Length: 436
View 1: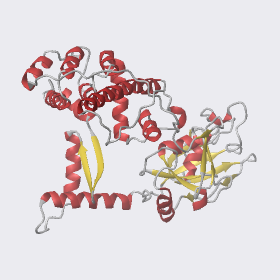
View 2: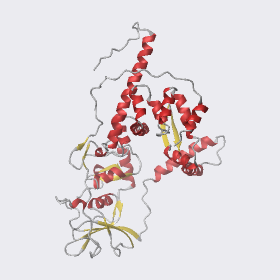
View 3: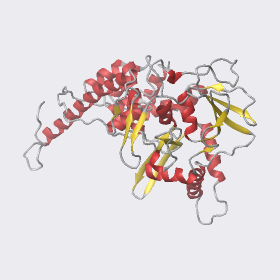
View 4: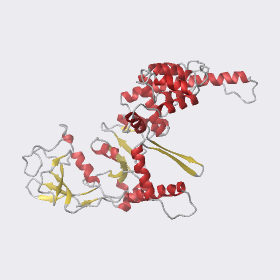
């Protein structure tokens, strides 16, 4: 690896040398990023992120490389666009086409217009490219195209700006209308001396407070409708080598709605839930349902007598959920950034038995809660300290991103192409002729 000396401000170097070196290294960084994006596209195509329990390649990328989630989604999108349009990748690998330009033109690029867009981007500034792309997207051919673009462009960005938080929310017209109507319902009509934009800001804050205050409220349950879980004696036994973990109940002919193989099943039924044959679910789904639910459980014994299983209302209290959220600050799965719509998961299931207390509970998002049950993952450790997440094969999921100790600095030299004059109207006419 080539060692590059750090230039001291007192060194006698010419401004011409500094300018040339800045451009050269910028081109080298562009070439390196092109290679990096090719790796991202291949990693996502082969679903390399799936084994780590991440929600998507972007979520894995955000966790492992430290970029924010919105940026990670853009990186993955551009990576696949370069894979689909190789002429852009070649121009980037030579250092001639910057990532900023690629990010813009790939929003509208297709096979019919790709070559024209490449030539336009090579001879224009990033600002000119962005202006042209924005103008082009506002001139969609049909309402359906515009609607699809609006849906793809939906986004919400948050950033700290001194002592304020700046939020930019972009929604399609239909969703945006619902959001505005909801905010306006919280607007105080009789607030003197404040503008509508200020009142709407206060209304959005009040709406958020209302959502946070009610998100953990248990659903209003009509006692005439219960979730009834029928369980056979061996439903929570350890799975054997024959793959009993994934077993379901047998056919409809079973007396109590459970099959000869003895697997748990769940029924949503009126009244006491005993008059309707329950529909079968896997044993691990039954465990997840029982983790935090308002239900009535029965265990079918070999002698034919039914005994109550657990408590009729086995839920994590509202106060305990608040304590868990304050302690965990979101989903505890490594790399997960979800802080809302969280489930309380028993590390040791209460059927084993494990108590419903802080030291045996952690917050998990819905996806990772299912991963712990249906996905075959497990957890060891103390939720008040260190936790270890184990994959189905018994290997441990790293709690921290991969650490890179060495950096390869061998990159190709390239010089950016000089930029030409910019005529927005002419560019739009030329590009419009290449609509697909």
